[in-house]
Length: 338
Image 1: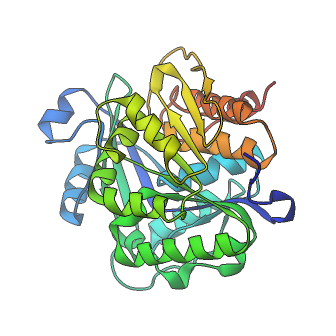
Image 2: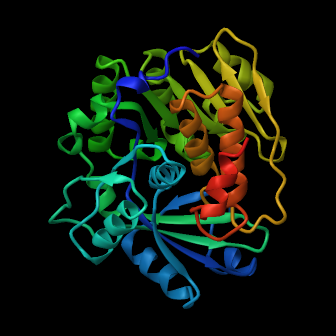
């Protein structure tokens, strides 16, 4: 893949754009899924009352950290040494300030103005069961207020890649912000990457995602097997892969769990990347987000696509061996190891 967004002329390697959310993680028993009527392994949107209830059932062992899918990617990129920026919306409340402090302390740039009215800063309540699976219940709050006025044209124009999460598509103004970012990026020779985010997200917006792909708005797709099959409405992964290869997108980075990942490039052979073995799967929160961080780090540093895949796999493997979606310093060194 020759076009990498001209990183040599960029001042930012990757700008990640998504719902700015405080993650609240709790390791609970398997019984909590049934007790609290949770949709295991999925992301469910909830209202403020439901958010208050679920927060209340978590005990003091819960962990709070800035997150959101693209936020996790931005932090991972910064930790790896990339020039990373983040675009998302929080309110001028305690959680909003905590989010900004948390993300900027990692080295990621975050300059979007706080909202001064409307709902509180968003939170994602993540129940982690003993099998390492994460069940997310998300109150979107102020994150839904992201609008075209929050898009800094100079930032997007100077970012080699702008990476956006599919969850943004749930709000009309965020859609407009998304489209504006695409226009700015492509007008300046930069690339757009889209994470499909979740099979249910794909179900909601399949026709619009496919229309964007057909229109050439998306250069790189990040997806897991279920998301890609949902996009093309098939239970056959081979069919989904073939349709992705024939579609109007330059590359698909497909994660396949225990089978590793597959880099599908238009007009070239698929690249198979083996899984990185782990001692214990503690928490799969952010595995896809950190795969994207590792991959995009290598991509903007000029590494081969196979090496990019290895970086992504190592980052994902590191993060699932602990609670939360952030890597430790030793993990970061291991990702970049030869």
